[in-house]
Amino acid sequence: MAGDILVPVDGSEGSDRAVRYALDLLKAGGGKLHLLNVQPSLGGGISTFVRKADIDSYHRDEGEKALASAVKIAADADMPFEKHISVGRPGELAAEFARRVGAAMIVMGTRGHTGLAGVILGSVAQDVIARADVPVCLVK
Image (cartoon, rainbow, N blue to C red; front, side):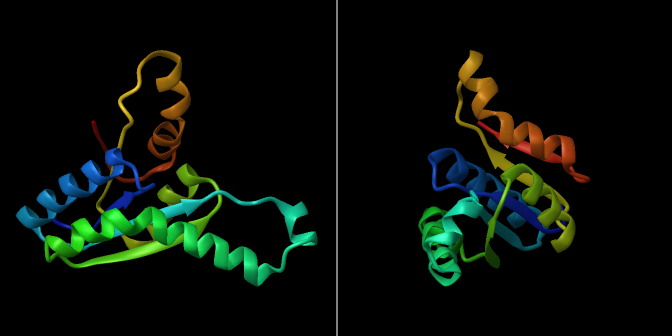
């Protein structure tokens, strides 16, 4: 597999597994790893009481926390990577970001839930699959 890979991460063990899997693919074929964390929007009403700079700082801090374990895994593997933080809907932004950076694939972790919990928690993965123009690999 040659080309860049996008891995949406949230700091969970599932996203860490996806990072390790993507790194294995990149070692075999080359390319760069893009780590993306998408922070939920705080909503328009909050900006009435909190400065935009403080909201931006909050999103950046929370994004850095969510990226920390994935960044460590990539750095320890001595592979080229870039980290990115965005704000909005995770599925929509992951698909859009993959197009923007020219990723050949999106690799995502799953939480391993079944039944109703799997349907609810799998909604981001389903959204990415529905919107992406490139293959999406789910790592359990």
